[in-house]
Length: 469
Image (cartoon, rainbow, N blue to C red; front, side, top):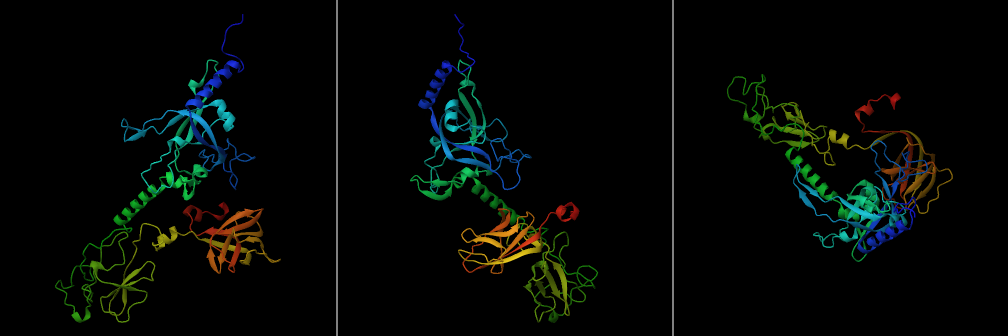
C-alpha cells in the first residue's frame, strides 16, 4: 500500500478540487473590481531606454531615476472578483504630526481565475477601480458624476493564506494605495467622465478626483501674500524723512541759518534747491533707488520734459530703462536716481529688464536655407517648384521637402505676423503644425534655419566654448 501524501510533483485532482472550492468562495463572497491593465511605458519619438522591439512590461523609461513616467494602459477594462478588508481611517497620534492610517489596502485574487481573465498576474502599475466604493452623495453639488475610487498596485506576491494542503498557491495578494493625479496615470485620468444618465461631460476624471486646483489656489494665495508683503526688490526708504543739505553735505544752508531762498524761484514743491542748498537726498543703499522724489513730493511723468518747468520740479522719464528721475535746476535737468527696484514676481505685467530676461522664450534664427509661402486653401495643391510637400488645413500640418535634422528650426508667419509652431519628423522630412488658427486666404510663410539659439540661456551654456557644444 503506497504512503498517503497530499503533495504531488504535479497538480493532480486534489489541487483541482481545492482550486474549484476556493474560486467558488470568491464567486459567493467577493466583489467585482475593474482593472486597467498596464502595458508598459509609452514609446517615445526619440531614442529611449526601451528594448529594440518596442516598450514592454519590463522596459524602463528613465534608467537614471528608474521611473516609467509615461505609462500606457489597455483601452479594455477587465473585471475580476476580489476579497479585501475594509479599513477604518483612524488618526495616528504616535508620531510627530497627525497621520491618517488606512490608506493602504490589501486585496486578494484567485490566481487561476486572474490568469484566465486578465491574461497575466496583476503587477505593479495596474490600476483598480472599486465600484462599490463610489461616493453617490458628494458634498459638492457641482460634481457631475459619482466620485470613483481608484487604487494603484504598489506590490504583488503570493498570499501566505493561499497555500492549500497540497502546497500549491491559489491566491494572489496585492498592495493598493489611492491613485493620485500624476503623470503616470494620465492615460486613465484623461478619460471623459460620465453622469448618472451615462451622458458625457466636459470634465475628465482627473478634474473630479484631483486636488491640483486646490493646491494651485493655495499657491496663488501664497504668492499674492508674498507680493503684498514684499512688492519690490531692495529696501523701501520712502517712509524716512530727509532734509535739504548744503553742498558740503551738511543739513540746512551754508551759513547755518534758515534758508532765505526767494519764493519767486520756488515752485509748490517745498524741497526746491538753490545755489546754497542741495535738494533732499534719500537714504542711499543697495537697491533703494525707486525713481520717486524724496519726502513724498509731487512728480510728473512722461517721455519728454515739460516746456515751462519751474526750478525744483521733479520729472520722471518713463522712456528710460530703467525709469529715471530728474530735477530742474534752472538751466538743466539734473539726474536724481534710477528706478532700480523691480517686481519680484515674473509675469506679463512685470515689464523690466529682469522680467524681460526671465520671461524670454524667443530664439535667434541664423543661416536660412528654405523659404516658402502658402496661400491657405482647402484643399491645397503645392506648385511644382514649391518646397512644400503637402498642407492640410484641418490639421494645420505642413510637410516640407527638406530632410529632417534635429538641430534645424522653423519660423512661421501668418500674414507677416510671427506665430508659434510645433516641429516634427514626417517620413524623414521636416514638418510643423501651426498652433494659431488658420483661415482661408491667409498667407502662411515659413523659413527653415540651420542654426537656432535661445535668447535665454544658462550662464554655463552661454559661456561654453563653441568647440564643447
